[in-house]
Amino acid sequence: MTVRRLKTYTGQQGYVYQYYFVGKRPAQAPDATEYVFDVTSDRKTTYAVSVVLPRSVVAVWAEAHGRPLADSEQYAAVKMRLFHGFDEVEDMPANGRQLRVDLPFLEESLAMLGVD
Image: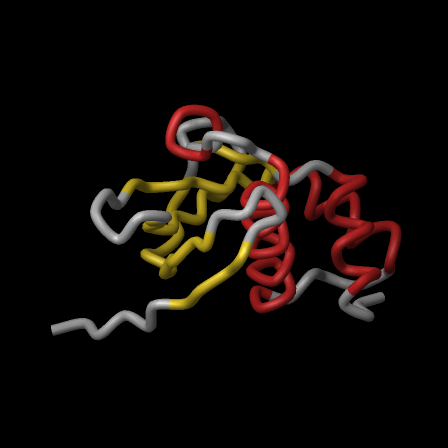
């Protein structure tokens, strides 16, 4: 039996989200990894939110910084994208079910975390 750690995040829209990481898998989009989180904002309805991290974005970052991006650093960027979705998307169940990490977001989020 897997015990999942339920975490909480208060978004700028005023919703309090509870979420946990389900896992990662190859995305349906070619050359990408999909990170899946189960999310609820009302403790009644749980829905999946996918954050897609293209391998090409990771490769460009690695080339620019002269080193590969560690799995934990990739997860950190994905989680930052999830939080950004919680902050910016008004209706997560309808409009935020699939989020994407692009290069500018990857650069910005890792810089905020002190990753270079």
